[in-house]
Picture 1 (cartoon, one colour):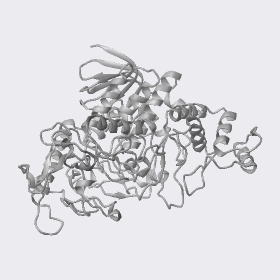
Picture 2 (picture 1 turned 30 degrees about the vertical axis):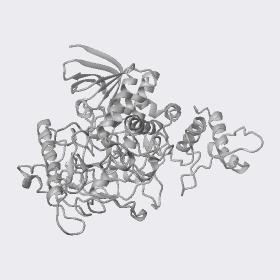
Picture 3 (picture 1 turned 90 degrees about the vertical axis):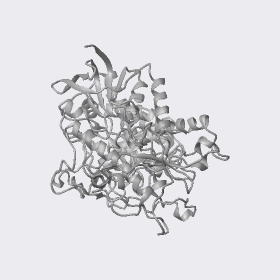
Picture 4 (picture 1 turned 60 degrees about the vertical axis):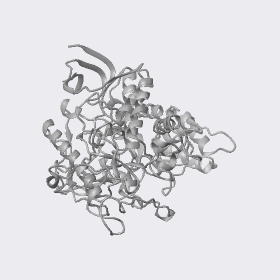
Length: 595
């Protein structure tokens, strides 16, 4: 049995895990990225979530709602298509969206291509990152809350100073004896408006096995075989193409595009997760539209995972896989037509190239809810990410290490698990607090995925692509900082100067920590860092109704006096006119904040 030693061990090559590895590699740390499967990227690749769950804030280039590295990843994916396919006339390789020709859609791309790009990024970082595929963690050596080493499925061990858990089910938590929870917390515990009256560990969000399809011309047929246990598989599913139980889509399947701009937000089962829009290409290999089936109808309803029994979990996942095939059979044969005349869309054809599986299903289930740190330094609750038009704004966490914007989207299970649907409203801009990544009962464990200190409700908002990437980037940056400074994560959280130093590292790499919508990293990284540091600090708060900082606006004497009073500091303001952006730099420099 051999032992390998690294500065940082990251378990789970999920979307967040890859972000963590790439972030830590910027600081010349040795990193092991260990994954039980063979495909990196998690929800963006092996789990089949090809359409990235983004709000409008993270769709456009140079946006304020995502990290620079996240936007660069999308640019790299676009670049792959630009180099390997012929784009249609007028399509700009720098800005196009492979899955949607029209503007204002979330980014969507072939999971296989995303995997190719992520693989290359890890190859580029291989001086620092050692990728171990198909390697499970079978045990851990832990002393007084400090993880010493992990045992691998091949019998070897890995040791490190810092360990990042970026598995989709928080698998290091039980292995390392760290307290964890999954399911619904009680209202008496969290005081969340939509929390349940009693805790229920079985109320876990359902998972889904996406299935890749293309739309062939009308008249063509490529039938799938009806699963032998079709009736049992579909007992709880409630297949439908209309809004309602398990529909989740505000419309019906159609073989036509909706061209009326007034219906732009109207989506069909096919267009919802579309990843190739043929109108983007002038290339025979992209002549048809492609999508994945990932809607309420194939959210698996009969059971949830994890159960605590790996063999049982594997059986549940296989049943869910067959359920997705059953849903496609239903769409091909029984789904009602838009006009009410006839049923079935036999021109839906399985695509096997998306995932490299013979049946077109994703190799891994898309996981919505993970084991979570039970005793984090900071737990994010529903009231911390208040909805727009709420009487209170989202909590401003002074230890913010990232931002997000998504609904608290808790999917339901109508079958035996009985997980209720939660509609907490459309959540406004919120933050990722450093304390949510750190448990109280471990000294060198960092959450790098959806296993952070959220709740059943808020975890529904933190699980999506741009936010998971931000969590991973923060986790990797924190791990590298702790190794370099020889401090524990909790010691960083406990010291304001260390928090500022960590935030500065993130900001220098273009990772926002506060919701300013008019401050560009690309325009001026130093000003970007100063304004964000002061936003999280509470020095500048915005006007309460918008996300504007107004960097070019004048900063008059009255504003200078107000900042002197707020910071209890007599600033040496320069004479003459001063913009708000210039003032932010002056404040940071004179307070000794790192920019």
